Image 1 (tube, rainbow over the protein chains, first blue to last red):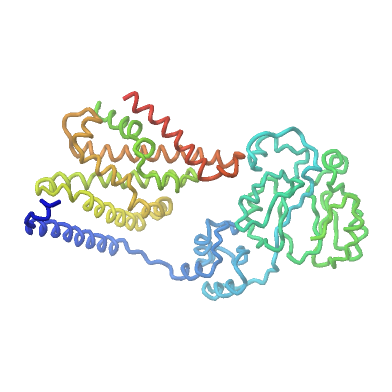
Image 2: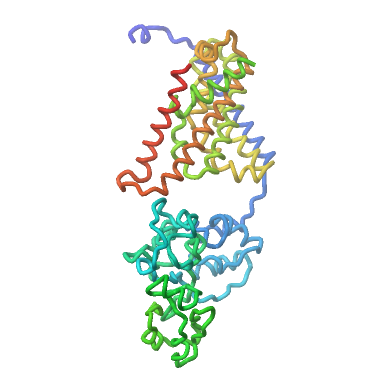
Length: 272
Length: 201
Protein backbone atom coordinates (compact mmCIF):
# COMPACT_ATOMS: atom_id res chain seq x y z
CA UNK A 1 0.00 0.00 0.00
CA UNK A 2 2.80 2.39 0.97
CA UNK A 3 4.63 1.40 -2.15
CA UNK A 4 1.57 2.18 -4.21
CA UNK A 5 1.11 5.57 -2.59
CA UNK A 6 4.72 6.55 -3.09
CA UNK A 7 4.97 5.28 -6.62
CA UNK A 8 4.84 7.98 -9.28
CA UNK A 9 1.64 7.95 -11.29
CA UNK A 10 2.26 6.68 -14.79
CA UNK A 11 0.30 9.31 -16.63
CA UNK A 12 1.01 7.71 -19.96
CA UNK A 13 -0.61 4.44 -18.92
CA UNK A 14 -3.59 6.18 -17.32
CA UNK A 15 -4.09 8.09 -20.54
CA UNK A 16 -3.93 4.89 -22.58
CA UNK A 17 -6.50 3.13 -20.36
CA UNK A 18 -8.83 6.09 -20.46
CA UNK A 19 -8.33 6.32 -24.21
CA UNK A 20 -9.20 2.64 -24.72
CA UNK A 21 -12.32 2.85 -22.58
CA UNK A 22 -13.46 6.09 -24.15
CA UNK A 23 -12.67 4.72 -27.60
CA UNK A 24 -14.69 1.57 -26.92
CA UNK A 25 -17.59 3.59 -25.53
CA UNK A 26 -17.69 5.83 -28.59
CA UNK A 27 -17.23 2.88 -30.96
CA UNK A 28 -20.00 0.79 -29.45
CA UNK A 29 -22.24 3.83 -29.04
CA UNK A 30 -21.88 4.57 -32.73
CA UNK A 31 -22.37 0.92 -33.67
CA UNK A 32 -25.60 0.68 -31.66
CA UNK A 33 -26.76 3.94 -33.21
CA UNK A 34 -26.07 2.64 -36.71
CA UNK A 35 -27.74 -0.71 -36.05
CA UNK A 36 -30.77 1.07 -34.59
CA UNK A 37 -31.02 3.34 -37.62
CA UNK A 38 -30.63 0.45 -40.06
CA UNK A 39 -33.07 -1.78 -38.20
CA UNK A 40 -35.66 0.88 -37.48
CA UNK A 41 -39.25 -0.33 -37.63
CA UNK A 42 -42.40 1.74 -37.53
CA UNK A 43 -44.19 0.86 -34.32
CA UNK A 44 -47.93 1.21 -34.36
CA UNK A 45 -48.85 3.98 -31.92
CA UNK A 46 -52.42 2.71 -31.84
CA UNK A 47 -51.36 -0.60 -30.28
CA UNK A 48 -49.43 1.08 -27.49
CA UNK A 49 -52.34 3.44 -26.79
CA UNK A 50 -54.83 0.56 -26.66
CA UNK A 51 -52.56 -1.49 -24.44
CA UNK A 52 -52.40 1.39 -21.99
CA UNK A 53 -56.16 1.25 -21.49
CA UNK A 54 -56.55 -2.52 -21.27
CA UNK A 55 -56.77 -4.04 -17.81
CA UNK A 56 -53.38 -5.74 -18.12
CA UNK A 57 -54.48 -8.92 -16.33
CA UNK A 58 -52.89 -11.07 -19.08
CA UNK A 59 -55.48 -13.73 -18.23
CA UNK A 60 -55.72 -15.01 -21.80
CA UNK A 61 -59.51 -15.20 -21.55
CA UNK A 62 -59.91 -13.44 -24.89
CA UNK A 63 -58.04 -16.25 -26.62
CA UNK A 64 -55.02 -14.10 -27.51
CA UNK A 65 -51.53 -14.30 -26.09
CA UNK A 66 -51.93 -11.77 -23.30
CA UNK A 67 -53.10 -8.17 -23.47
CA UNK A 68 -50.39 -7.14 -25.97
CA UNK A 69 -51.55 -9.71 -28.52
CA UNK A 70 -55.16 -8.66 -27.98
CA UNK A 71 -54.26 -4.98 -28.47
CA UNK A 72 -52.55 -5.79 -31.78
CA UNK A 73 -55.59 -7.68 -33.04
CA UNK A 74 -57.89 -4.86 -31.87
CA UNK A 75 -55.85 -2.29 -33.76
CA UNK A 76 -56.12 -4.15 -37.05
CA UNK A 77 -59.75 -5.07 -36.45
CA UNK A 78 -59.30 -8.82 -36.05
CA UNK A 79 -60.65 -8.93 -32.50
CA UNK A 80 -63.86 -7.86 -30.80
CA UNK A 81 -63.64 -5.60 -27.77
CA UNK A 82 -66.32 -7.57 -25.92
CA UNK A 83 -63.96 -10.59 -25.84
CA UNK A 84 -62.22 -8.86 -22.95
CA UNK A 85 -64.31 -9.21 -19.81
CA UNK A 86 -61.86 -7.70 -17.36
CA UNK A 87 -61.48 -4.15 -18.68
CA UNK A 88 -64.03 -1.67 -17.29
CA UNK A 89 -66.64 -0.11 -19.55
CA UNK A 90 -65.13 3.39 -19.33
CA UNK A 91 -61.74 2.10 -20.47
CA UNK A 92 -63.41 0.10 -23.24
CA UNK A 93 -65.10 3.27 -24.53
CA UNK A 94 -61.72 4.99 -24.76
CA UNK A 95 -60.23 1.99 -26.56
CA UNK A 96 -63.10 2.01 -29.05
CA UNK A 97 -62.41 5.66 -29.82
CA UNK A 98 -58.72 4.92 -30.35
CA UNK A 99 -59.28 1.89 -32.52
CA UNK A 100 -62.26 3.42 -34.33
CA UNK A 101 -64.63 0.55 -33.63
CA UNK A 102 -68.13 0.42 -32.24
CA UNK A 103 -68.80 -0.55 -28.70
CA UNK A 104 -71.29 -3.34 -28.23
CA UNK A 105 -73.36 -3.20 -25.09
CA UNK A 106 -73.10 -6.71 -23.72
CA UNK A 107 -74.60 -7.45 -20.37
CA UNK A 108 -72.01 -8.27 -17.73
CA UNK A 109 -71.61 -11.99 -17.19
CA UNK A 110 -70.00 -14.23 -14.59
CA UNK A 111 -68.71 -17.78 -14.71
CA UNK A 112 -70.62 -20.53 -12.95
CA UNK A 113 -69.74 -24.16 -12.27
CA UNK A 114 -72.57 -26.34 -13.48
CA UNK A 115 -72.03 -29.27 -11.15
CA UNK A 116 -72.90 -29.95 -7.55
CA UNK A 117 -71.67 -33.55 -7.41
CA UNK A 118 -68.28 -33.63 -5.70
CA UNK A 119 -68.43 -36.08 -2.82
CA UNK A 120 -72.06 -36.87 -3.68
CA UNK A 121 -71.02 -38.22 -7.08
CA UNK A 122 -70.05 -41.90 -7.21
CA UNK A 123 -66.36 -42.70 -7.77
CA UNK A 124 -65.27 -45.18 -10.42
CA UNK A 125 -61.99 -45.94 -8.62
CA UNK A 126 -59.65 -44.48 -6.05
CA UNK A 127 -57.47 -41.95 -7.82
CA UNK A 128 -53.91 -41.48 -6.61
CA UNK A 129 -51.67 -39.13 -8.56
CA UNK A 130 -51.24 -35.57 -9.71
CA UNK A 131 -53.95 -33.33 -8.28
CA UNK A 132 -54.78 -31.24 -11.32
CA UNK A 133 -57.84 -32.02 -13.43
CA UNK A 134 -56.02 -32.59 -16.71
CA UNK A 135 -53.87 -35.35 -15.21
CA UNK A 136 -56.99 -36.93 -13.68
CA UNK A 137 -58.84 -36.88 -17.00
CA UNK A 138 -56.02 -38.79 -18.70
CA UNK A 139 -56.76 -41.89 -16.62
CA UNK A 140 -60.06 -43.38 -17.81
CA UNK A 141 -61.60 -39.93 -18.13
CA UNK A 142 -61.38 -39.10 -14.45
CA UNK A 143 -62.39 -40.95 -11.30
CA UNK A 144 -66.08 -39.94 -11.34
CA UNK A 145 -68.68 -42.25 -12.85
CA UNK A 146 -70.49 -39.22 -14.28
CA UNK A 147 -68.60 -37.98 -17.32
CA UNK A 148 -70.01 -34.46 -17.05
CA UNK A 149 -68.94 -33.75 -13.47
CA UNK A 150 -66.45 -31.43 -11.87
CA UNK A 151 -63.38 -33.40 -10.78
CA UNK A 152 -62.45 -30.99 -8.01
CA UNK A 153 -58.75 -31.00 -8.94
CA UNK A 154 -58.58 -27.22 -8.78
CA UNK A 155 -57.09 -26.53 -12.23
CA UNK A 156 -59.57 -23.66 -12.54
CA UNK A 157 -58.60 -22.09 -9.22
CA UNK A 158 -54.92 -22.37 -10.17
CA UNK A 159 -55.48 -20.54 -13.44
CA UNK A 160 -57.85 -17.85 -12.09
CA UNK A 161 -55.89 -14.56 -12.06
CA UNK A 162 -57.96 -13.04 -9.25
CA UNK A 163 -58.79 -16.03 -7.04
CA UNK A 164 -62.54 -15.97 -7.70
CA UNK A 165 -62.94 -19.74 -8.05
CA UNK A 166 -62.16 -22.24 -5.29
CA UNK A 167 -62.82 -25.93 -4.72
CA UNK A 168 -65.20 -26.08 -1.76
CA UNK A 169 -65.45 -28.66 1.05
CA UNK A 170 -67.77 -30.78 -1.06
CA UNK A 171 -65.07 -31.21 -3.72
CA UNK A 172 -66.70 -29.02 -6.36
CA UNK A 173 -65.33 -25.79 -7.76
CA UNK A 174 -67.39 -22.76 -6.78
CA UNK A 175 -67.29 -19.26 -8.28
CA UNK A 176 -67.55 -16.20 -6.06
CA UNK A 177 -69.76 -14.04 -8.29
CA UNK A 178 -68.83 -10.84 -6.47
CA UNK A 179 -65.19 -11.22 -7.56
CA UNK A 180 -65.51 -13.00 -10.93
CA UNK A 181 -64.82 -10.79 -13.95
CA UNK A 182 -65.84 -13.46 -16.45
CA UNK A 183 -62.42 -13.47 -18.11
CA UNK A 184 -62.94 -17.08 -19.18
CA UNK A 185 -59.54 -18.41 -18.12
CA UNK A 186 -61.18 -21.22 -16.13
CA UNK A 187 -63.60 -21.99 -18.97
CA UNK A 188 -60.67 -22.56 -21.31
CA UNK A 189 -58.80 -24.64 -18.74
CA UNK A 190 -61.55 -27.00 -17.54
CA UNK A 191 -61.15 -30.39 -19.27
CA UNK A 192 -64.79 -31.33 -18.45
CA UNK A 193 -66.25 -28.09 -19.86
CA UNK A 194 -68.42 -27.78 -16.77
CA UNK A 195 -67.94 -24.02 -16.34
CA UNK A 196 -69.97 -21.56 -18.39
CA UNK A 197 -70.96 -17.91 -18.47
CA UNK A 198 -74.36 -16.69 -17.30
CA UNK A 199 -75.62 -13.08 -16.89
CA UNK A 200 -74.39 -11.54 -13.66
CA UNK A 201 -77.98 -10.62 -12.75
CA UNK A 202 -79.31 -14.16 -13.24
CA UNK A 203 -81.37 -15.14 -10.18
CA UNK A 204 -80.93 -18.91 -10.60
CA UNK A 205 -78.72 -21.43 -12.39
CA UNK A 206 -78.76 -25.17 -13.11
CA UNK A 207 -76.02 -26.84 -11.08
CA UNK A 208 -75.82 -29.98 -13.20
CA UNK A 209 -74.39 -30.64 -16.63
CA UNK A 210 -75.32 -34.31 -17.09
CA UNK A 211 -77.05 -35.03 -20.38
CA UNK A 212 -77.60 -38.67 -19.39
CA UNK A 213 -80.99 -40.33 -18.88
CA UNK A 214 -82.53 -40.55 -15.42
CA UNK A 215 -81.40 -44.10 -14.63
CA UNK A 216 -77.74 -43.45 -15.39
CA UNK A 217 -77.80 -40.25 -13.37
CA UNK A 218 -79.45 -42.05 -10.44
CA UNK A 219 -76.62 -44.61 -10.44
CA UNK A 220 -73.78 -42.12 -10.71
CA UNK A 221 -74.78 -39.14 -8.61
CA UNK A 222 -77.02 -38.30 -5.66
CA UNK A 223 -77.54 -34.72 -6.81
CA UNK A 224 -77.70 -34.99 -10.62
CA UNK A 225 -80.51 -33.79 -12.86
CA UNK A 226 -82.78 -36.69 -13.82
CA UNK A 227 -84.53 -34.68 -16.51
CA UNK A 228 -88.02 -35.03 -15.03
CA UNK A 229 -89.08 -31.69 -16.50
CA UNK A 230 -90.99 -30.60 -13.41
CA UNK A 231 -89.26 -27.23 -13.49
CA UNK A 232 -90.25 -26.61 -17.11
CA UNK A 233 -93.88 -27.52 -16.38
CA UNK A 234 -94.15 -25.50 -13.20
CA UNK A 235 -92.46 -22.32 -14.43
CA UNK A 236 -95.19 -19.63 -14.56
CA UNK A 237 -93.30 -17.62 -17.20
CA UNK A 238 -92.31 -20.48 -19.51
CA UNK A 239 -88.66 -19.59 -19.12
CA UNK A 240 -87.45 -23.19 -18.86
CA UNK A 241 -87.20 -25.68 -21.71
CA UNK A 242 -85.81 -29.21 -21.56
CA UNK A 243 -82.87 -29.89 -23.89
CA UNK A 244 -80.91 -33.17 -23.69
CA UNK A 245 -82.44 -34.09 -20.33
CA UNK A 246 -81.38 -30.77 -18.87
CA UNK A 247 -83.37 -27.62 -18.12
CA UNK A 248 -82.26 -24.58 -20.10
CA UNK A 249 -83.20 -21.25 -18.57
CA UNK A 250 -84.11 -18.27 -20.73
CA UNK A 251 -82.84 -15.44 -18.57
CA UNK A 252 -84.84 -12.84 -20.53
CA UNK A 253 -88.08 -14.46 -19.32
CA UNK A 254 -87.01 -15.55 -15.84
CA UNK A 255 -88.39 -13.27 -13.13
CA UNK A 256 -86.70 -14.98 -10.18
CA UNK A 257 -89.94 -16.31 -8.67
CA UNK A 258 -88.06 -19.37 -7.31
CA UNK A 259 -90.86 -21.81 -8.20
CA UNK A 260 -88.43 -24.14 -9.94
CA UNK A 261 -85.92 -23.90 -7.09
CA UNK A 262 -88.59 -25.09 -4.66
CA UNK A 263 -90.09 -27.72 -7.00
CA UNK A 264 -86.85 -29.47 -8.12
CA UNK A 265 -86.76 -32.91 -6.43
CA UNK A 266 -82.96 -33.08 -6.69
CA UNK A 267 -82.34 -29.47 -5.61
CA UNK A 268 -80.03 -28.78 -8.52
CA UNK A 269 -81.60 -25.48 -9.61
CA UNK A 270 -79.87 -23.12 -7.24
CA UNK A 271 -80.11 -19.52 -6.20
CA UNK A 272 -77.29 -17.65 -7.85
CA UNK B 1 -11.69 -34.47 -34.02
CA UNK B 2 -10.41 -35.45 -30.59
CA UNK B 3 -10.32 -31.79 -29.58
CA UNK B 4 -13.80 -31.24 -30.92
CA UNK B 5 -15.17 -34.16 -28.90
CA UNK B 6 -13.30 -32.98 -25.84
CA UNK B 7 -14.80 -29.49 -26.18
CA UNK B 8 -18.32 -30.97 -26.27
CA UNK B 9 -17.80 -33.23 -23.26
CA UNK B 10 -15.98 -30.56 -21.29
CA UNK B 11 -18.32 -27.65 -22.01
CA UNK B 12 -21.63 -29.51 -21.85
CA UNK B 13 -21.05 -32.02 -19.08
CA UNK B 14 -17.85 -31.77 -17.04
CA UNK B 15 -17.89 -27.98 -16.73
CA UNK B 16 -21.58 -27.34 -17.25
CA UNK B 17 -21.94 -23.62 -16.63
CA UNK B 18 -25.02 -23.85 -14.44
CA UNK B 19 -24.75 -27.13 -12.60
CA UNK B 20 -21.00 -27.39 -12.03
CA UNK B 21 -19.66 -23.83 -12.16
CA UNK B 22 -22.85 -22.23 -10.73
CA UNK B 23 -22.87 -19.37 -13.22
CA UNK B 24 -26.08 -17.96 -14.68
CA UNK B 25 -28.30 -19.15 -11.83
CA UNK B 26 -30.69 -16.20 -12.24
CA UNK B 27 -32.19 -17.24 -15.59
CA UNK B 28 -31.88 -20.89 -14.52
CA UNK B 29 -34.40 -20.26 -11.73
CA UNK B 30 -36.27 -17.35 -13.30
CA UNK B 31 -37.08 -18.63 -16.79
CA UNK B 32 -37.43 -22.36 -16.10
CA UNK B 33 -41.17 -22.44 -15.38
CA UNK B 34 -42.14 -23.55 -18.88
CA UNK B 35 -40.16 -25.73 -21.23
CA UNK B 36 -40.57 -23.63 -24.37
CA UNK B 37 -39.55 -20.45 -22.53
CA UNK B 38 -36.54 -22.26 -21.08
CA UNK B 39 -35.55 -23.46 -24.55
CA UNK B 40 -35.87 -19.93 -25.95
CA UNK B 41 -33.67 -18.58 -23.17
CA UNK B 42 -31.11 -21.35 -23.75
CA UNK B 43 -30.96 -20.62 -27.47
CA UNK B 44 -30.54 -16.88 -26.83
CA UNK B 45 -27.71 -17.56 -24.39
CA UNK B 46 -26.04 -19.93 -26.88
CA UNK B 47 -26.18 -17.29 -29.59
CA UNK B 48 -24.77 -14.56 -27.37
CA UNK B 49 -22.06 -16.81 -25.90
CA UNK B 50 -20.81 -17.84 -29.35
CA UNK B 51 -20.65 -14.29 -30.68
CA UNK B 52 -19.10 -13.04 -27.43
CA UNK B 53 -16.26 -15.56 -27.70
CA UNK B 54 -15.81 -14.67 -31.35
CA UNK B 55 -15.25 -11.00 -30.46
CA UNK B 56 -13.69 -10.96 -26.99
CA UNK B 57 -10.98 -13.53 -27.73
CA UNK B 58 -9.35 -11.50 -30.55
CA UNK B 59 -9.71 -8.27 -28.54
CA UNK B 60 -7.88 -9.82 -25.60
CA UNK B 61 -5.32 -11.63 -27.73
CA UNK B 62 -4.47 -8.91 -30.24
CA UNK B 63 -5.28 -5.65 -28.45
CA UNK B 64 -5.02 -5.98 -24.68
CA UNK B 65 -2.12 -8.44 -24.42
CA UNK B 66 0.33 -6.56 -26.70
CA UNK B 67 -0.43 -3.35 -24.80
CA UNK B 68 0.03 -5.07 -21.44
CA UNK B 69 -3.45 -4.11 -20.32
CA UNK B 70 -4.81 -7.56 -19.36
CA UNK B 71 -6.34 -6.11 -16.19
CA UNK B 72 -8.88 -4.23 -18.31
CA UNK B 73 -10.45 -7.51 -19.45
CA UNK B 74 -13.59 -7.36 -17.29
CA UNK B 75 -14.57 -3.80 -18.11
CA UNK B 76 -13.90 -4.32 -21.80
CA UNK B 77 -15.81 -7.61 -21.90
CA UNK B 78 -18.84 -6.08 -20.18
CA UNK B 79 -18.76 -3.28 -22.74
CA UNK B 80 -18.64 -5.77 -25.57
CA UNK B 81 -21.34 -8.09 -24.24
CA UNK B 82 -23.81 -5.36 -23.33
CA UNK B 83 -23.55 -3.51 -26.62
CA UNK B 84 -23.51 -6.78 -28.56
CA UNK B 85 -26.78 -7.89 -26.98
CA UNK B 86 -28.35 -4.54 -27.81
CA UNK B 87 -27.31 -4.82 -31.43
CA UNK B 88 -28.38 -8.44 -31.79
CA UNK B 89 -31.77 -7.63 -30.29
CA UNK B 90 -32.42 -4.80 -32.73
CA UNK B 91 -31.18 -6.82 -35.69
CA UNK B 92 -33.40 -9.79 -34.80
CA UNK B 93 -36.39 -7.48 -34.33
CA UNK B 94 -35.89 -6.16 -37.84
CA UNK B 95 -35.01 -9.29 -39.76
CA UNK B 96 -36.95 -12.03 -38.00
CA UNK B 97 -39.98 -10.88 -35.98
CA UNK B 98 -40.98 -14.46 -35.20
CA UNK B 99 -37.55 -15.20 -33.73
CA UNK B 100 -37.79 -11.91 -31.85
CA UNK B 101 -41.10 -12.96 -30.34
CA UNK B 102 -39.58 -16.25 -29.24
CA UNK B 103 -36.22 -14.97 -28.10
CA UNK B 104 -36.42 -11.19 -27.86
CA UNK B 105 -37.75 -10.90 -24.34
CA UNK B 106 -34.84 -12.95 -22.96
CA UNK B 107 -32.08 -11.10 -24.79
CA UNK B 108 -31.99 -8.03 -22.48
CA UNK B 109 -31.77 -10.43 -19.53
CA UNK B 110 -28.53 -11.79 -20.94
CA UNK B 111 -26.81 -8.40 -20.86
CA UNK B 112 -25.70 -8.96 -17.29
CA UNK B 113 -25.73 -12.77 -17.32
CA UNK B 114 -22.62 -13.98 -15.53
CA UNK B 115 -22.47 -17.18 -17.58
CA UNK B 116 -21.67 -15.11 -20.68
CA UNK B 117 -18.98 -13.11 -18.91
CA UNK B 118 -17.78 -16.41 -17.42
CA UNK B 119 -17.25 -18.04 -20.79
CA UNK B 120 -15.44 -14.95 -22.08
CA UNK B 121 -13.14 -15.04 -19.05
CA UNK B 122 -12.59 -18.79 -19.34
CA UNK B 123 -11.53 -18.91 -22.97
CA UNK B 124 -8.81 -16.29 -22.42
CA UNK B 125 -7.42 -18.19 -19.43
CA UNK B 126 -5.12 -20.23 -21.64
CA UNK B 127 -3.48 -22.41 -19.00
CA UNK B 128 -6.82 -23.53 -17.58
CA UNK B 129 -8.61 -24.17 -20.84
CA UNK B 130 -5.68 -26.10 -22.30
CA UNK B 131 -5.54 -28.36 -19.25
CA UNK B 132 -9.35 -28.78 -19.39
CA UNK B 133 -9.29 -29.83 -23.01
CA UNK B 134 -5.89 -31.54 -23.00
CA UNK B 135 -4.61 -29.52 -25.94
CA UNK B 136 -1.28 -27.80 -26.49
CA UNK B 137 -2.27 -24.68 -28.40
CA UNK B 138 -5.23 -22.35 -28.17
CA UNK B 139 -6.88 -20.62 -31.11
CA UNK B 140 -10.01 -18.72 -32.04
CA UNK B 141 -11.77 -21.83 -33.32
CA UNK B 142 -11.45 -23.58 -29.98
CA UNK B 143 -12.65 -20.44 -28.17
CA UNK B 144 -15.76 -20.08 -30.34
CA UNK B 145 -16.47 -23.81 -30.16
CA UNK B 146 -16.20 -23.72 -26.40
CA UNK B 147 -18.58 -20.75 -26.27
CA UNK B 148 -21.14 -22.53 -28.46
CA UNK B 149 -21.12 -25.78 -26.53
CA UNK B 150 -21.11 -23.99 -23.17
CA UNK B 151 -24.35 -22.38 -24.39
CA UNK B 152 -25.74 -25.80 -25.31
CA UNK B 153 -24.80 -27.04 -21.83
CA UNK B 154 -26.71 -24.09 -20.40
CA UNK B 155 -29.72 -25.00 -22.56
CA UNK B 156 -29.55 -28.63 -21.44
CA UNK B 157 -29.57 -27.69 -17.76
CA UNK B 158 -32.37 -25.13 -18.04
CA UNK B 159 -34.60 -27.39 -20.15
CA UNK B 160 -34.09 -30.31 -17.74
CA UNK B 161 -34.95 -28.01 -14.88
CA UNK B 162 -38.13 -26.74 -16.54
CA UNK B 163 -39.31 -30.33 -17.10
CA UNK B 164 -38.70 -31.10 -13.45
CA UNK B 165 -40.51 -27.98 -12.31
CA UNK B 166 -43.61 -28.78 -14.37
CA UNK B 167 -43.78 -32.19 -12.67
CA UNK B 168 -43.07 -30.74 -9.23
CA UNK B 169 -45.88 -28.18 -9.62
CA UNK B 170 -48.39 -31.00 -10.01
CA UNK B 171 -47.31 -32.78 -6.85
CA UNK B 172 -48.85 -32.25 -3.48
CA UNK B 173 -45.94 -30.71 -1.60
CA UNK B 174 -45.74 -29.42 1.95
CA UNK B 175 -46.72 -25.71 1.77
CA UNK B 176 -43.49 -24.60 3.43
CA UNK B 177 -41.49 -26.20 0.61
CA UNK B 178 -43.83 -25.30 -2.24
CA UNK B 179 -42.51 -23.23 -5.11
CA UNK B 180 -39.02 -21.84 -4.78
CA UNK B 181 -37.58 -23.98 -1.93
CA UNK B 182 -38.34 -27.31 -3.60
CA UNK B 183 -36.88 -25.93 -6.85
CA UNK B 184 -33.62 -25.15 -5.08
CA UNK B 185 -33.50 -28.65 -3.59
CA UNK B 186 -34.16 -30.22 -6.99
CA UNK B 187 -31.42 -28.02 -8.50
CA UNK B 188 -28.96 -29.19 -5.85
CA UNK B 189 -29.64 -32.83 -6.71
CA UNK B 190 -29.14 -32.08 -10.40
CA UNK B 191 -25.83 -30.37 -9.59
CA UNK B 192 -24.72 -33.45 -7.64
CA UNK B 193 -25.60 -35.68 -10.58
CA UNK B 194 -23.54 -33.52 -12.94
CA UNK B 195 -20.62 -33.51 -10.51
CA UNK B 196 -20.14 -37.20 -11.26
CA UNK B 197 -18.77 -36.22 -14.69
CA UNK B 198 -16.05 -34.29 -12.87
CA UNK B 199 -14.99 -37.42 -10.97
CA UNK B 200 -14.84 -39.49 -14.15
CA UNK B 201 -12.64 -36.86 -15.79
